Amino acid sequence: MRLHEFAEIAKKLPVVSLADVRSTMPGLRQETLSRWNRSGKIIMVAPGYYVLTGETSEETDLFAIAGRIYTPSFVSLESALSFYELIPETVLSVTSVCTRKTRRIDSPLCTFIYRSIQPEYLFGYEAKTGRNHRYLMAFPERAVVDLLYFRRDISSAEDMLELRFDTETFSGLDPMEILDMAERFNKPWLTRKVKILIEVMKNA
Image 1 (cartoon, one colour):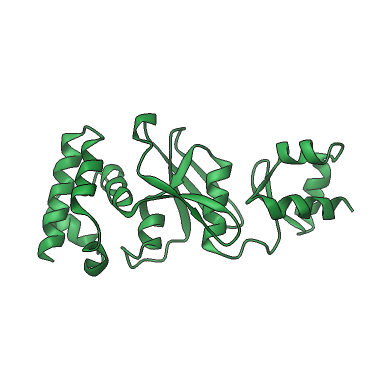
Image 2 (spheres, helix red, strand yellow):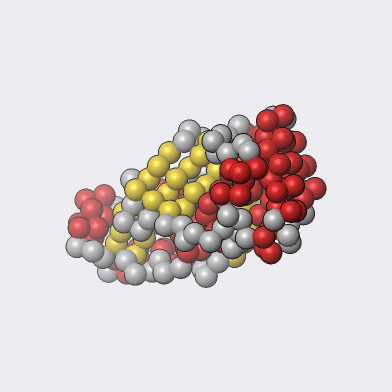
């Protein structure tokens, strides 16, 4: 019966926290959750966070989980670029930008990676609706800026070409929006890199 109650909670949330369990199922011991996890009935995604086995079947489910286990954050970088089909690679982890310290969570579902930024840089994203839950996703222009911000090894036109951005998809982005977002970081080196990328993609 207790597992049935847990399942009802899990339908409403992308991932169930210990706080959720304690507020809705008082008296349920953490040892019970550990036993369900060991028996394969539930999956511990991160310390103190659980999902029902078999209920996480789409990428957007992982995006929603990522946003709940480490907040405030939004999906960006390679995960967002792959989502928008700006890069050809299939990304096996979910990478987000957050205002807390950089963190990596290796879970049975996937690896969740969080890259740290200053609170004033928390902009350029929107709420999207997935299969069952909402999640926060960077605008494609913001994902491009984040990649150049965190990838300090990318600086020249040759480096930009090696990123293998899809030229047709990139042409649908607003170059001025990319530049405006970069300038909000107030980092001259970032603005310079964005200008190089825009020029490279224009001539690609």
